[in-house]
Amino acid sequence: MMLTTKKLFGSTNRLGKREKRILLLMLQKDNPPGHATLLWLSIYNEFKIDYSSLSKKYQPEYMEEKRCRCSIYRLVKRGFLKPLLVAQDFVLPDPRGSGYLFYYLTKSGRIVAEKVQQQNRGLTDQPDLKVALSKLRDMGHTQVTVAQIHEVLWQQSSQNFVTKEEFDKHWNGTKLGLMLRKCMVGRDRVGANDGRRLYRLQGATLF
Image 1 (cartoon, one colour):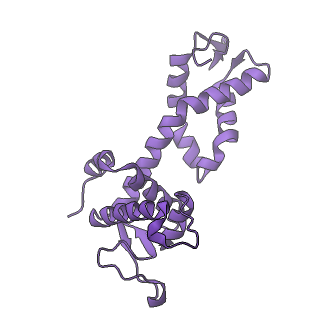
Image 2 (cartoon, rainbow, N blue to C red; image 1 turned 45 degrees about the vertical axis):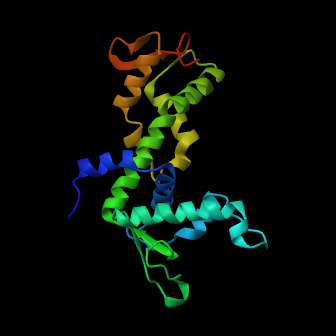
């Protein structure tokens, strides 16, 4: 039975940190949606699993690999990931579904992965805004518009977004204006006939 969007969003709270990281790895490669991904290659890079010539089971990385396998199994069981038989030569037999090399995000898995991505970005919004305002202040500005801040934010974080449209949706004017009002001492109008706001950098609580 297909979970509702509300239940899918709620399910992110029941995901472990490792499961969230794996979903984000899958989301990075999910283009077009449902694209088969060589997941274990990404996992080895993300979790710094680099084996020496010794037997695997005697190396500390082996426990991390086992934890990742368990996380994949849980994601498969919940219907967020699906193992994919691309070619017999590329498949590791594992009845739990966590040993395959290739996986793809299901529709519900992509929704949850995007929610995790939004939550992660939300954690960095205030630090990102602080950096942007610091840059503008270092450039000699004492008052700035939302458009100026928006441009600096794009310059410093464009690599975190797939498109400019995605960035604009995340850092929309309403959200940015509310954050600025919370951290700024005061604001002024650009002019009598100009409704834009000028936000004062002096006295900002972020500094």
